[in-house]
Image (cartoon, rainbow, N blue to C red):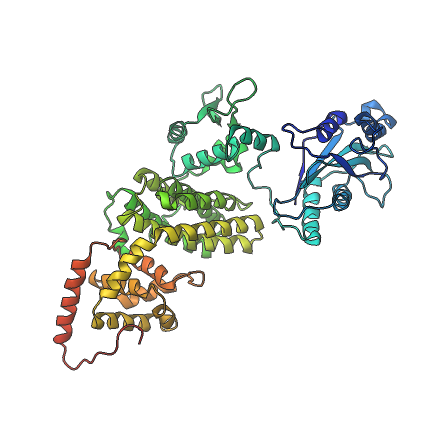
Length: 575
């Protein structure tokens, strides 16, 4: 249930004409009164002799009882209350009771005091009502409407529970502004799936992802096809900006511009500038030696995704153990990474990654003010994703996409816990939704690279497969039997073989990969360990062309075992 207090007005009659009229697009059906201050107000929708003017005169009558100088400049209070589309259709009696409780919660009319404001509740659709009230009480005093929005929101949460409706999470005022009904109707007329404001919000967020300067930001906005207006001070300093879609026009056939702050609280120019701070410690100092030794010149989608996975892994430490302000900055920067990954993803993962980015946008803001600077590894990852260009979705960049998604899933899981511990209900819910979209994106991205690893694992000879089984049982005795029973075990066995061939100790690296982060939320522990090991050992994520290397490795292993008499083989695999 969503209560919304609209901007106060001056004309009660004009609002009544709208509420009882056909609507701007004939969407109003059977308008009628469902409740009023005295249960006896005339209903122009039901009483043949009642007029809009009759109802307006009665509503505004308290204004005549006070000195004109004391009348409020805007005396019309307007509240709409809307249910979720999946809620059951309420009766007029239920909506009438909701209206009475809402005006009492807001301070418009309290039955216990007996001298409230006059009000009427009109229903012209199945899923919502409108309440109009005059902001002068019967005794001539004005109502106390301090925090009326918060009070009606709290009442909505109570009513949801009592009536068995969809239960919404309590907000904290940091969400982006919802599209207005006028914007939604306009979008439908124009054949858009989303409103212009929502399209602009996504476009600006993608332009901001990894950008390092105003010039770069505005170049990206222009490249995305947006119209831009800059607000410049007499001194020449840039104060702000507005953007518009070229085909979103007003009645005068002029583009409709939106300031960044109206798109989302963190898209105003001053808030965007905060992201460009370069102070703070280097969060990537803890990266594995193999990663730090990688060629800095490496570029392209695969390299960008591998560095994204590494930066996300390091950011997990901050979310789990860092200062709140620094953790908030990392969560905000992870949103940039998701935007950049969605913008450069292949077709088979694009929709789910885009949905994940759109959902996580709500989780990127809270009242914990982000301390920028030490989140620059994630912002650099977003920048490299954009500069690396679109992924083809196969080969190494397809496999590293699965690796990056896997790391981001665990980061967002940590963000869920972080928000939940601090009572950020809407943010935690948004992060959960993003995690589900990421799970779907992973399921689209992972089968091909993991399938290649699985085939390689099935081709390992029995002595080598037994060796990897022994490594698993030594490194992870509590998880070994579970992993051996998973379909992904053979992919993990192939990866352990690659780890050893690269010169690493597979037992210690496997123990380290499993011990640093929780595995309870993983659908497949073996899959998670595959990506963690391949990232930490700097191994190729795609192994489709390594059959020859496998055969050489197995021949050398067999030769080594023949040179070590006295060793007896046990049954390999899951024995």
